[in-house]
Image (tube, rainbow, N blue to C red; front, top):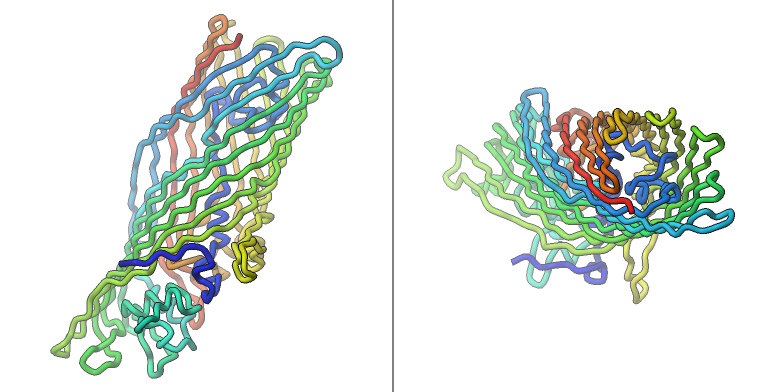
Length: 536
């Protein structure tokens, strides 16, 4: 039965890098998607200077200052998702469909006299990210093994520290890496001539393949309270507070099968050639809450022109990680009578807290109202992913405090860079009641080339060494809207393409600089968004 390790107090002897959050964890939780009302989505989210839509509660709070009447509405989303994994040997597609209740909002208007024409307030809920993704891949020739990677960073550790003993649990009572402990106890790695020297399963002449399947799910929801106003129909201001609720879960099965591997022989208590295979399963859950502040202003220097600026502080997140790892393995030595080793090994459960500051977000936009029939809008946003920062919970001084994670903060700056987001939108009023819309949204790569191309070692946490980096994201959107007196209904179609690179483990480790199992992932989302509401 697995024991649960709760907090760092129970892990006083454990090196924090053994279990701690990684820069990849911060990166996984931080990005947001193009989501919101159907009108907002159909125009590519280019509303920094437009306002007058419930989605501005999450984007530019000055947008509620545009309102002259109160508004209440909600939205739904049907998402058809496809993930295609391409390797040098195979191409595999996985599809799934999800339906969401995506957003709800209310804006109230208090009309005033004087310079301040009205004072507005708003509350809203919006799902700003969905983590749902499934993919699987197959690499017919690995060139090396995960076991060799683990052996490389286990060198120099006395194997007695990795084995269970009477009143001794290496997960709790040592400072060794959990993946080293798991691999040694499951015969993924073995002693090679001495108690502190290790060999993986892959040797000269080994032929091996790899199979993996990843399932991610969860959400990031934001609840907003905004205040704004209208100054002389020239300046619209706003400020807001965002409360974020996040839950991310991930499970991965990673398997290798090898012929002519370097395996443990029970009969001789040494290493020999044989066949081997293992499956490494990992489950991780990250959940937490946080808060941020938003500030914005929209200026109307000319009747047809609006210019908007908004700033989002980091979301200050308090997070909890739980999970475990497990190995099912076998090795076969054909020339001995006691020729098969097989079994199942697993880690203790872990449970610890940490903190994350997400990036600052800066956005600017301009829009033009052309007569009474058309609106065109354009935005630029910069998100400084390389400025994320992390802290871990420290109990070393007879109490709990949070300490900067300097090692992982350095990794963040090494792996990531700022993203540039461009948004354009067009709305054309066909009749007083019907409108047609078109939008485009583009986000640049967030990963530095050396990390994306495998030219630097990538650090991960726990017993899951796999990771993926996102590349650029494109959104093409169209929509229609209908107005009848105070009631409105909008429909949008959104096609999103995102490319990612998956790596089973880092390709740079001691004694090896060749390829590791990787795959290119092409993700396509086809979203149908429906919104409706009343203005009164």
